[in-house]
Length: 94
Image 1 (tube, one colour):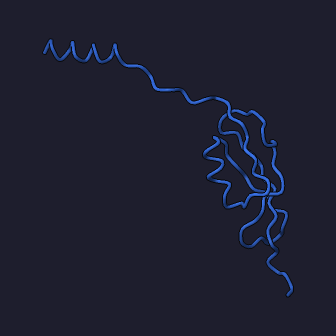
Image 2 (image 1 turned 60 degrees about the vertical axis):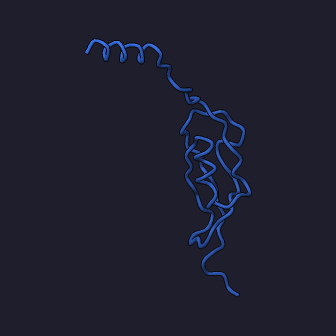
Image 3 (image 1 turned 45 degrees about the horizontal axis):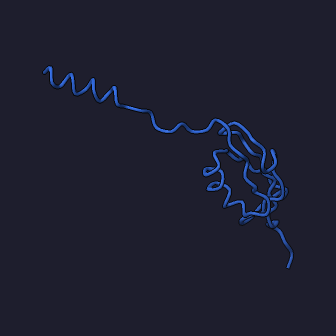
C-alpha cells in the first residue's frame, strides 16, 4: 500500500499542465467565401458566427459580403462575428 501511495505522489509531483489555449484570437477573413465554409473557418480560428442575409428568401449557398468585427481584429476567444451574406433570390425570373 505504501508503495502505491509513493507512486501516486511521485506521479502527481511530475505532472505538468498542457499548453493553455490563448484567451484572444485573430478574426479571420470571411469575405468572398461561401457561407457554408464559415463553420470550419470559425472553429479553427476560435470564434463564433451569426449570418445576416441581404435576401428576403435566400436559397442555396451565399457569399459573405461583409463582417463585423473586421478581419485581423484581436478579440476574446468565442467572440461572435456577424457576417453579411448575399444569396441568390428564390424568385429569380428566367
